[in-house]
Image (cartoon, rainbow, N blue to C red):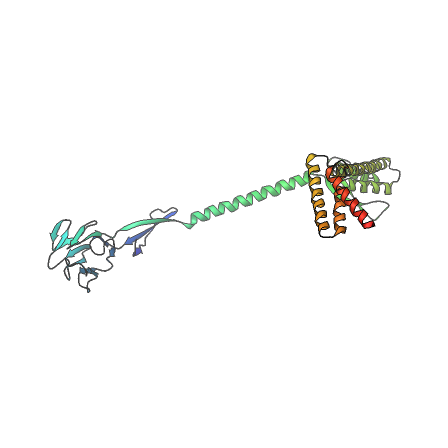
Length: 328
C-alpha cells in the first residue's frame, strides 16, 4: 500500500527498553470513478498536473469530459493546493478555481472523481532494545551454571557417603586383585581370605553369582580351610545344577506342547494338507509318473495316520494298487 516512506531520526519516546520507528507516507489521489477507477496516484513531487493531454503527470486520455490540462496539485507553504485556469474543478461539491485540499477531500474533474489522502507520519512498529534480550540471556546462563553446581555437589556428597572400594593383593597369589569394602565406622578386616568372602557375599546379594563364586574361590586359595566359603560355593553350584535341570525340563515340556495338536483347528489343517497331497498324487498318476504319485500318497498316509479315516483308506488303496503293479 505504501510505495514511498522515510524513517525520521530522533531519540526514543521511552528511555527504557522500547524504541519507536516513525514512517512518513507520501500523499496520494485515489480514483473513485471514471477512467483509472480504483488506482492510487502518489504525489511524489511538489507539483503534478492532470488532464487529457499525454504531457500531464496524470493522463485521462479517453475521457472527453476532461480538458487537455485540467488541473494541477502543488505544495504551497506546507499545504496542498489544487488550481485550474479554465475552471471545471469541483471540490467537496463546490466549483472552485483554487482550493486548499484537506485529508479526504473529493475532487471532480469532468467525469472523474478522486479522493485526496494526505501523507502523515505514523508510528508503524516498535523495536525492542537489544539490552533487554541480553538481560534474559544472562539470566538463563546464570541459572544453568547454578544448576550445574548443585548437581556436582549432590554427586560429590553421594560418593562420599557410599562405601569406598580399594584393591589389595591376596597373600598367596599374584594373579588377581581382591577388592575390599571399607565402610565408615567399621573396623577393616585384616585376613585376606575373610575379605574375599565378604566381597563374595556382597556380589551374591547384588545378584552377580559368577563374581561371588570367583571371590569365594579366591578365599579358598588363600585359606583352603575357610568353611563359610566352602559352604557358599557348594550351595551355589547346587543351585546352578537345579536351575539347569529346571530349564531342561521346561524346554522338554514346551516341545511336547508344540508337537501336540489335538485341537479341532489343528486336525482340520492336517486333513486339508493331506487332501492336497492326495490330489497331487492323482495328477501325477494321470501324467504316467507313478513314482511321484506314490510319493504323495505315502505322505498323505503319514499326515492322517488314522485307518478309520476315508481319505486314509483311499490313499492306502492307491498305494497298494501301485505296489502290486510295480511287482508285476
